[in-house]
Image (tube, rainbow, N blue to C red; front, side, top):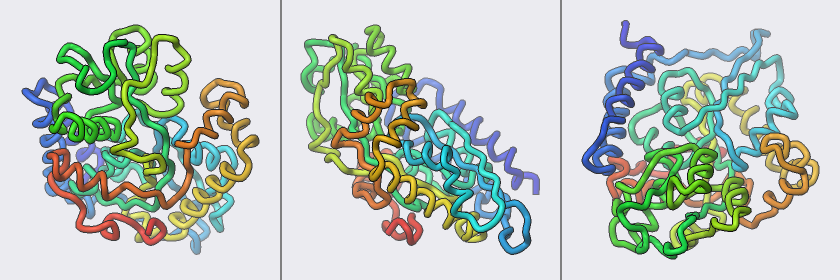
Length: 353
C-alpha cells in the first residue's frame, strides 16, 4: 500500500509541520494542533505496520545495524562516551554497525522515529510525551540525565515572571520542548496560567538563543547546561528566577527511547544499547577527570572547565531519575498533550522501571 512507505510518511509529517508553522492566534492552539496532527498521521499511516521490520541478525552472522539520534549539550555526555569508546559494539555479541545522527530538535527525532528511520534516540521528556501519546511506536528504556535549567535575562528590571511584559521575548529551544513546558509550569505556579507567556516565546536552538540573549535580541532564555554556564560568564546575564519549585534538582531531563520494532524484534541490539548506556554513565560518574578530557572536545573548552561543569550538583547521569509522569500529567492537564499515558509501565521497557 502506497501510504505504508516510510518516505511518504515523513513527507506527511513535514507537510504537517509546515502548516503548523503558520501564524496561530495563540500558542495554545499551535501545541494542540501539533499533537492532533501527529495522532492523525499515525492513525492514517499505521506506523506500527509500515516501519522496517527487523529480524534478529545475531544468529545469522549478518552485520547488525542500529541508527541512533541525539542532540547537543552536556546532557548527552553518555552518548558521547558510548560513541568514543565503542560501547555498543563492545556489548553486542557479533558484528554491528552503529550510525550516529545529530538532530536539532525533539520534533525532528519524533519524525524520524515515526517514519521508522531511527531505531534509538535520546531527547527531552516533553517531546517524548507528545509523541508517545500521539501514537508514535516507541518506549523509554531509561532516563539519561538530569541537568540544571535556568531562566536567564539581560534585563535588570526582570526579577520574576511578573516582570516580563508583552514586548519581552523569551527564547526556548522549540515549541513543545521541555524548556517550554518548564516555563509553562512556572507560569502556572506564579501567574495562574500555564499559557500566560505563550506569545512571548521565540524558538531558537540553545546556541542561537544564547547569542540572542547576549546581544539583547531577546530579553530572556530558558536553557540548560552548558549554555547557562557560558552565558553567565557575561556580566550582563543573570538568573531571573529559579525553577526549583516546579522541577527540583535531580528530576529527569533527557530520556532514552527505543522503537517498538527494535525492542520486540532485535532484543540483542536493544540490550547492547542499554548495557552501553549504563557503562557510559558508570564511566562518567567514576572517572570524571578522564571523562572531562573526552567531553571537553565537544564544547571546545579546557578539560578543567568541563570538569567544573560536570561537578555542578544539577548534572546527574542515572537511568532511573524521577519526574517523567509529573511532566506528562501537567502537559495533559494544561492542553500541551491531549492525554497523559495510562501508566509509567505503558510507555517504558523493563529496564526503565
